[in-house]
Amino acid sequence: MNNFLNISDLSKEELRSIIDGAKQRKSERGEKPHSQSDSDQPLQGKTMIMIFEKTSTRTRISFDLAVKQLGGSSIILNQDEIHYGKGDESIKDTAKVLSQYADILMIRTDSHKIVDEFKKYLDIPIINGLTNKGHPCQVMADILTFEELKGDIKGKTISWIGDGNNVANSFIEAAEKFKFKLKIACPKKYQPDKNIVKSAKKNKCDLLITDNPYKAAEDSDCIMTDKWISMGDKDDKKKKKKILKKYQVNKKLMKCAKSDSIFMHCLPASREEEVTSEIMDGKQSVVWLQAFNRIHAQKSIIEWCIK
Ligand code: CP
Ligand code: NVA
Image 1 (cartoon, helix red, strand yellow):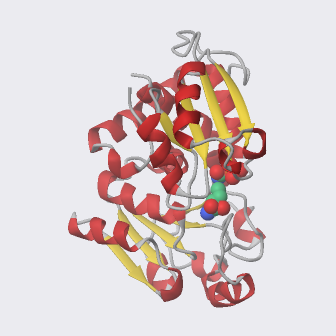
Image 2: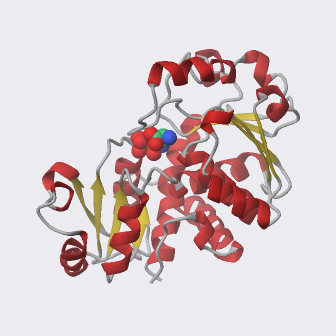
């Protein structure tokens, strides 16, 4: 059994096998209806429990579909429906019980410490469905999407413009493993996790962090951004938005990238803040394919976890 908590926990080979497995399963599936299972049903008889401490549209539904397509079943819980978050029961005791009811756990939580704590006590695999520190499932779907459209991501240039948040952190870990160049433009106050940056640099990741969005976007194959205010963000929202204003992805910024570059956003988006509708709905945008590919990337992640 394997856990999927941080991109950095997996080897290059394991990550590559997840992406390639997703490509293969997606192409073999063809145009089957959403809830119809794949013919081999590798999750038959198995159950995934999903816990959401924060809201979700894509992660919740794409994981549910992923499990169904693999032939398994899922139970989805919000935090107010279970005991541990309220202090009624410890994570240790919760983990012991869940291990007897299900074969895999997916959790979205505000604190990365909670997923680490669950991992300590679970006898079943755990998947990180987003924490304050990372969003590895999203990044795997984004790599799948990039490669579907632009070929091998190795050696390509990806630009992250805006808040140095959880998704940006997972991209730094991915840049090191998949060997792409990552250029991050963010204000000094909102940089990615210091330890993740330090470790990436130590491992010779091709990473540039600048406060100049145009420099980061230059000659890029893919421009990415995310909401300026993440779920659970404790920063002063008004102040943060003001500082981030010059990091908006718009026509002027997209022009700095390669003419055939793509635009990505994990969604949900705050249109006219981090990205203009002109770009989000424009020809270079691949945001809907990104959301769709969450299903396919996660099927492959689940398969790897139950190995
Ligand atoms: N991108 C993403 O994780 O979306 P949700 O918050 O809707 O799950
Ligand atoms: N950075 C965002 C991603 C949402 C999918 C958040 O954590 O809210």
